[in-house]
Image 1 (tube, helix red, strand yellow):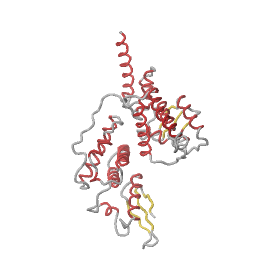
Image 2 (tube, helix red, strand yellow):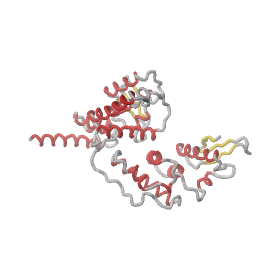
Image 3 (cartoon, helix red, strand yellow):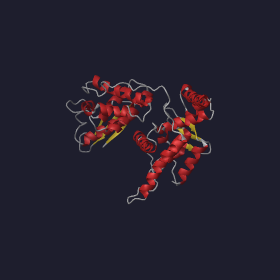
Image 4 (cartoon, one colour):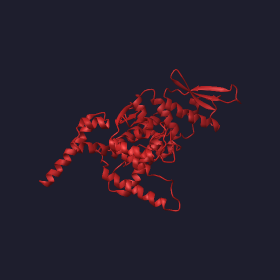
Length: 372
């Protein structure tokens, strides 16, 4: 039996086995980052159960430094995060963990590093559904990861060789506006109705709850990761606020619960009563989730949005994040100032908010010029 232990800010793996002498072993994981430590305990515990590592005769370093054994992607990521946790800022480490966690989910964490191809890597770093800024972040992070592995002799070649940084478009991604969302939602509901009438109908409610999620994102401007972490206890209906325990910046904050978002949530909650305060707000009707893998959840929601967007309007390049752009665009079109947009969308830089105002003015100018 293995567990995670902490002492003076450093984490250890604590292993107990009544058939060994002594019956307990505690080894340093050489990290002060809790998430990295948890990943290491999971990997080492499994290796012990399979007889691939003996903590009574080997150290943690011995396990990772074995030659002639292809390094698994999940293990490589754990080692990278452990090392970087000692010399990068907390938010940088958080970004590394998020990007590489999504990467492992996309390509398969059980794959070995030498087996990864450039095509597999670029399908993730250059995913057309991701914004250009996201593509560039993914490329830079994954490239840093493979460069680190190669510098330490953990891989001989890198699939990033010859791969260039995705170009920045210099413009805002296309927004998903209410009329777009109606078409996408119609495609999902139409498929659900057809399936319910088939010989093997899906559970009642099926995928339809995504429609409420998408409308909530459009009317609040929340990022998908913020919606993924949202629990019923964080929604303050009487105060018109949403408590966010972790924003993009890593800090806690609040967001406005607009009237339209409030109506969406109240209707959604009525169909799911009773709900518990600790439950996540958005989940399939037959689940009562209180714990989840945020990265995997967000990826699956993005895939669902893309699937129905492609059916409804294949000509439009929209992603789930386009709903946030739609929120900001609607505010700008209705005359809100850049400062108001910044506060409502919680932008860190007012220049980002100002781009929506400029874009709207450009649209107006084009329409006027077209008439005159």
